[in-house]
Amino acid sequence: MIALRYTLFAVLSTAVNIAFQYISFLIYSGFLALYVAMFVGTVAGLVLKYVLDKKYIFFHTPKSKKDDSKKFLLYSLMGVFTTFIFWGFEIWFDLAFEDESAKYLGALIGLSIGYIVKYYLDKRFVFKD
Image (cartoon, rainbow, N blue to C red; front, side):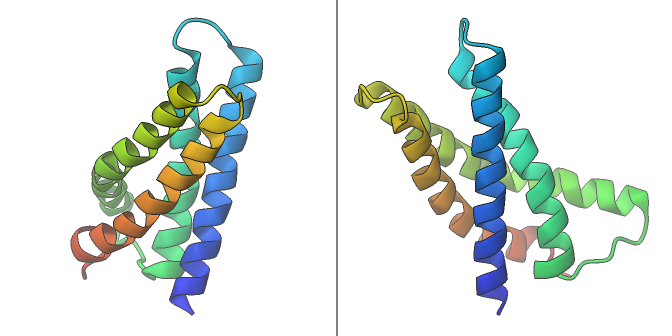
């Protein structure tokens, strides 16, 4: 059941990430627009995924706001490696293919791989108690 929930949350977070990237491109299409959009999408997906994972995957109840902040920081740090996977795929697909939507396909592949890795990192290092 956890695998199904985690998969659904990953899909939802991916959709939010891609939607925020799309909106970012509508607002800004200048210098380094892809990187701005990836950052905006990453932050949006990160916050949503943290809340869902904390509550429905790892069933963590923070002891205080300080504890929650520490968990979020650690959760974010564990996401740095997986973010590089996601960004790498998105950038590579954007550069390798002429199609405008290729970057989104790269993002989907990178996010999928990243979320699998992130689950194990979070289980072992973030929500280990």
